[in-house]
Image (cartoon, rainbow, N blue to C red; front, side, top):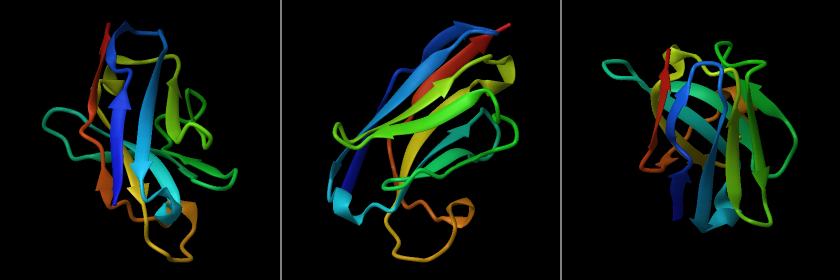
Length: 125
């Protein structure tokens, strides 16, 4: 099993920046991809960004392209999401997720089955 714990949420003004971290532990050899998702009040959970656990490719939702950057530090078993130029509509609970399925699907079609508990990000106008 893989365990995920998110850190770094908080309150920030519009236009500001925030960096989220996700500490991963457990059977990390089974992880193929990692991602960030978010869920705003009254809305469905939506994809934000993804990257391979081993590899350089990244994939972003159109709504965050050019503003958010996903990265990881394999030595620290940590996934990051750098969020710049934040907007009030970015307000949501952000979740870290892991994909442990041994499929050949591209990064944009991975299925994430392991989730962290989430961290709140609030952007004030």
